[in-house]
Image 1 (cartoon, protein in one colour):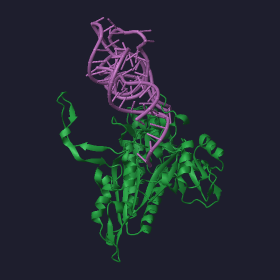
Image 2 (cartoon, chains in turn orange, cyan):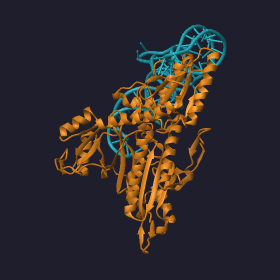
Image 3 (tube, rainbow, N blue to C red):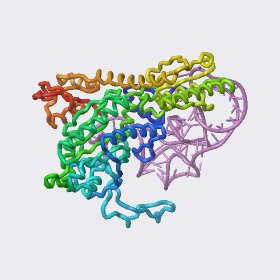
Image 4 (tube, rainbow, N blue to C red):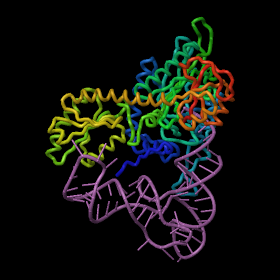
Length: 492
RNA sequence: CGGGAAGUAGCGCAGUCCGGUAGCGUACCUGGUUUGGGACCAGGUGGUCGCAGGUUCGAAUCCUGUCUUCCCGACCA
């Protein structure tokens, strides 16, 4: 049977869906817009989560956990934030069901059990966390407070898409409190660097660090920093955000501290998060028609060994060699599986592990045994080589590093080739329609202009790059003066 | 929330116009032959046709209502 995944750029959404569903990462739930992360997908998330978690801890953060339910009165305390999320929160209004008097075996919401105050299911946890921080912070000695939480959140989106936009998703959200504005801004940027480091070095996905325009800013933030990545269909994806919240939440929740000079002041805050959306980014950035391509550093399985045999005797001889290789690879901390399941034939296994994105495949059969060889295939280039069994483990260790680097280089080359400068409006529109990717152009800095550009082209300012050089120019739409280019793109 | 499409076996679909025993592919089970890129042969299991009403001797099929999902917009990480 031929592989069912077919890629055509115009059917990118369908291709992406098929890939996620068939590679064993996730399923759709019967509950609208929610996803089920399958064991393989969760293993991938665990690796990503553990790597990030370590990076947070290495930078002085600790984990905690806060409630799923947020009383409406707390939720509405920070007005900008509340209004920003109001349209997409799930609301709990009752606390009990009862038997339906009209239909046997059915239940109805008990009208007697209406809550005095509705509970919001967190779309993000600023409200519940800051109402708690109020009690935890009195003095500068309590600061900085550097807390992260791994949790699920719910945002009732009109339209959902596996991993990229689901009604419920898993993420981490950091919430920190600081004595000074400078320290809080430093924290915001530190986390941005952590995110960029993780996405580039673990996920092999190059990103652009930047600041959001006021239109795209997180509701309740003073500044939103972000990392932006480019997908293979030319659309941009926001991969992570880090917000400088100023004193907005401290004021809304009355979180004050006494400083060294005995002055009372509001604390300065940050919040930051990345979600299971990163898995979507990974799939869309690296994969091909044959399935997933996972960077070795986050692949749940880095290598797989597939035996080829015609009878028991051959199988026994292959087994012996395979177990030796497994042992050697494990000594080098390489995750490996010997798939000697007799139910599937070798060809089936080849296709299966390619679909799952396993970086390296080792095949051993009688032909190889006779020559003390194995066939080693790499997923990123699909190249196959015959390698001597002597020293094969170190060969594979090097190969994994090479694959990691190659996947990154490939993505970076593609990304760089798809950042195009535009200086005229017609050129700008043409580039968006025909080439896609990031368009680097001047913008007059006004929300109205950004809004007009979005209406006419569906493109938004993805970010104002942090490392942008200063350069005089004219706004792509209005012709007004501008001092630096910003990145536009159509985005997910 | 606006515009389109679809709900029939685990999955993918045909059948619906024109009402008359529930079909195909795949998966699954049994036996045998196979095994270097998703094997083949034979036999078999599995479905109150999304749900609720209605018309009819008879409804997957016609009518009414309803729920859900997908796609395209607006919103969003």
